[in-house]
Image 1 (cartoon, helix red, strand yellow):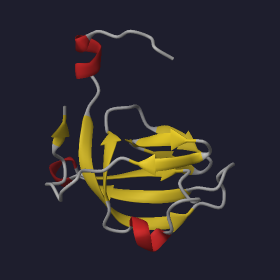
Image 2: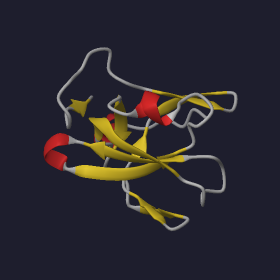
Image 3: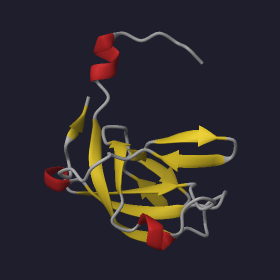
Amino acid sequence: MNTAITFEDFTKVDIRIGTIIEVKDFPEARNPAYKLIIDFGELGIRKTSAQITTLYNKDKLLNKQVLAVVNFPKKQIAKFMSECLVLGAVQGNDVILLNPEKKIKNGTVVS
């Protein structure tokens, strides 16, 4: 999938650093997933779901910093409203979360 986009297209994507402050099971999801509550600093708290149960347990996720797209429209997933999209690399059936090398201020713009 190599659809070319312009630099202007890329600048529309708002990627920020956030810290996972709460992790809950999501039994209503079609595929095994967690509900994540993420602190984006001045942007506030956002919720999302992530199919990352094969590589991450809830304790490993708590206080982990992640990259997420914060300007997608909200999306209904089962009875849960997702407000951002956590970024990860897909390897086989697993998703490896992308995160900063060092602790960084929540809400920092990724460019």
